[in-house]
Picture 1 (cartoon, rainbow, N blue to C red):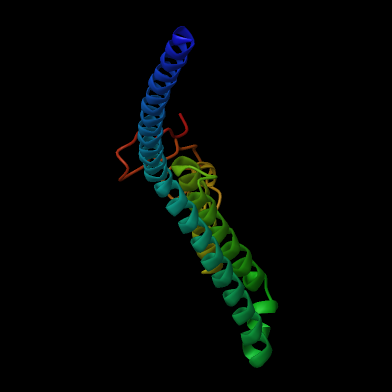
Picture 2: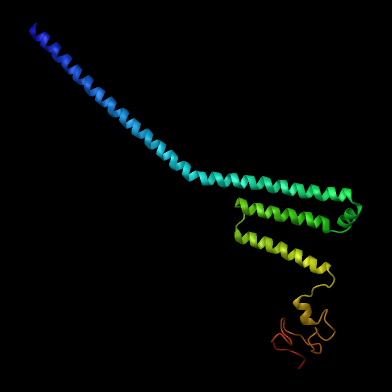
Length: 191
């Protein structure tokens, strides 16, 4: 019997030791879990710090897009309200192409700016588009102000000049574009 009692005590002692070991493992696991949760919080904070500028940029793009849309709508509505209120404005706007051209160019410029802000178009593309529109507008303004602009070819061939071969004094001869008296170039008259 003694041996049974000894075996039972030995087993109880072993169970107590195992229980203590399990408690230590559970404590270690809880500590590990706690550390992992702290790391998770740190990683999430780092991810948020990385994504915040992108989120702010997207919010900015959205706000600017809405603002420009409202601006375009307001200008177009104001354009037509002015045309409805004043007969003179209506006649001036709709008797020629200028009113529709204004609306179209205004809308294009706003769209190009929006494309630039949202990143659809890059700097070189924006510069080319805005430069082309500016050239068109300034070219139209020069054309409608009276005298028609002459191209280099017209000046070189004497078209539209002063009747003296392009206004450079040569008797009907062709002149290289951008040359002539005062331009520092060489005249090529009749030989």
